[in-house]
Image (cartoon, rainbow, N blue to C red; front, side):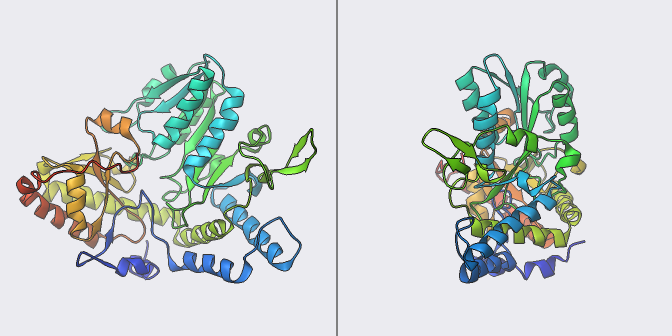
Length: 423
């Protein structure tokens, strides 16, 4: 079990007041807060070790290079990679998937080939494959969901054919919280020799991840969703596949030698890490991983599921038909994400109203517009949990929503600004 009160001491931002109320941060699926240990690790790098990596033999450069390479090793152990050389530093999940699409996809896909995605995909997994498919005249197919927000696994055998070359999907939905059956999808995809690309942005921070056990071919995730800094993420890939690819971006540190007529690409992972990397970001991400490992991901997942179960019960008891919740009814297949709408109110209106109580939630399409259209709505309000959230905060969310509902007729008359909230 997590000692949440002790954990909260590491997050000074949680002591802030917003609109006269103590901050309740329920926007963790968008980005998490950072503990002081991560901030201090980044500061220490800049204050004591700052230099470019792999560029010099002086002491600072050697120290920076060692910290940078150690960060690769820490992350490799975190996901049980075969080697740290399979761990590629990128900016975020979006860049990671684009790299796979532009390198592996452009090399291996051709006219008539098929790409299987899902209706619940984040735009960052869906759009890179659609762009490549258009360029090579491949066909994109989609695995639908049930009304409860589960993937229709029974359709896999019909959708995956001998022409299927890649299956890309979210391990966990950023809207519904659905935790997908990764091994089942991998088994179906590999039965026809298709490559599996797993979007782990919402899974890796919350549940144990073992790439050897899961059997995926590529895994992408972001540091800022798991207590790390923004601007750094990870692409993991099977070594044999990565070694067969040329870099999508090239330049400094991607080569062993260059003449006017030829180039010899560097070893893994450097051939895919062009230019000066986000060194401090990797140092911070490694410290975030260490922090999560001290907590134990099994404990993290259990804590979030307890918050989920408590939220679903309180919503049903206190809010009833006034609120529609989206996603699986069974908490066993769902993570700590609760997307909902208040009857008769625009999702942005609800989000702005909750902010008056100091409660930070996400509203909009959550970069998953096709999923919302499948649900029959244009957007939702999303509360998403992490290690520092408490049942007392859930209680305050429920009470705030009861107040919002009590004045919803007046709120419904307020003009709604249709802002873009992440796509």
